[in-house]
Image (tube, rainbow, N blue to C red; front, side, top):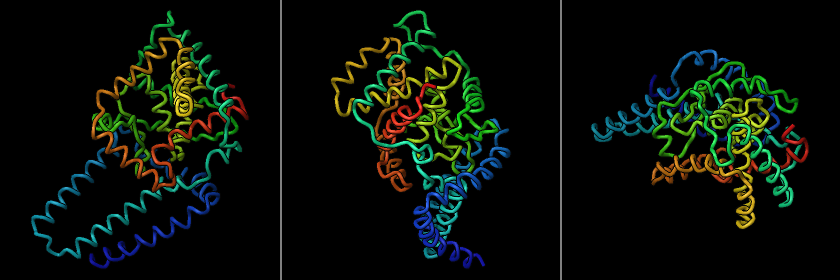
Length: 357
């Protein structure tokens, strides 16, 4: 019976891959029946079951899987690869179940309609439009900065407990009123990751567990970065699997919030992407624009950069390569570079609706 089950699950793997390859050709179908319906029910159930747990159940699940895999490999070598065909079936059966659960619980969102199509905005923009948008961002960032400090050269300190920042971002989602977005985030399910140290070395601010739909954030990062990092992960929880879309949502949500610290975090978050995009084509212009920023804003940027520099090393490069390939497999052909396409959404949304209103 076990052998039959393993063989059945193994045979299902290529069938599933073929079905996903077909399904991804119909983003409207996925958008209507999965992302806006079935996924909402699944995620609501997951949040109901797990949000009350003060630690990340998903982190423990991952730890258990890693330990189980290592133990399986140990037994394989100890038994000198006996019953290798059965072991191969076990691997394929495991991958088959993993593949199914990943897509059923969350992964199909990678193939939903692109956000710009739902918003009815374009994806092209001119250099002039980008520069104009960046200049306005700089002005509003400087104003937001001056409201929080007594001097232009002082960085903004986020003297909040991490749970307070979690609640602020949750409130931001609850209070966000915009007919163009339909955020259904009814129960807070955000937790500090048990693996924050490895995440720091890997260069990640957080992640969403696709099997439990818990949002984990790296509690070691500077608190200044937490609002947008948490908002980004909640964007993933809501079914916006693509990195550029989650970054865009984090920017929009934070910029519109009434809390001055959350708003400042959102403005500087969006500004960094815009300045980076300008730097790629015109480094000198980007330096001119950066010189217009309050020195205190630059100190906040340097605070974050200093944090990541402490952990930079071969692990980060390896994880960038691995995660970049993961993104390419899951309908983001630009890999890690897809993060930069958030600028297209920001500029075109601003052009059509005014991002600051």
